[in-house]
Image 1 (cartoon, helix red, strand yellow):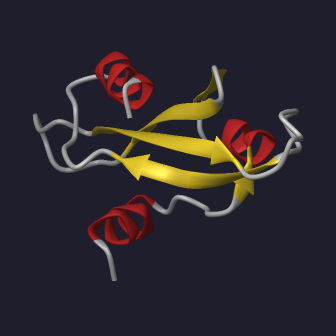
Image 2 (cartoon, one colour; image 1 turned 90 degrees about the vertical axis):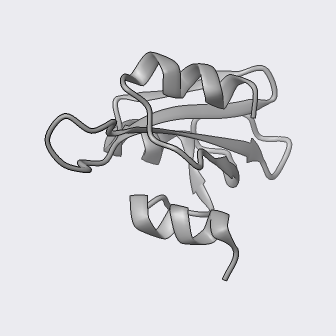
Length: 92
C-alpha cells in the first residue's frame, strides 16, 4: 500500500468521489483551476497540529459538483490551521 493510500485511509478520504460529497463531509472543499482542494481536521492530541490538505483531480470532462474526482495528493504532515492546509493543497 502506498504512503498516500495509507494517509487517505487514516483521514477516511473517499476515492473516487464528487465535490458534492466532499462538501457534505468537510466544510473546506473548493474548485481551484483544474482540481478540487480541501482541508480536513484529524485530531492528533492536545496542542498538536490537526489539519491536513488533499487535492483531487477531475476524472471526466464533467467539472460540476457531481463530476467524478480522484485523489491526487494528501499532505504528509499536519498543519496548525486549515489555511495552511489549503495553501499546501493549492500547490499539490
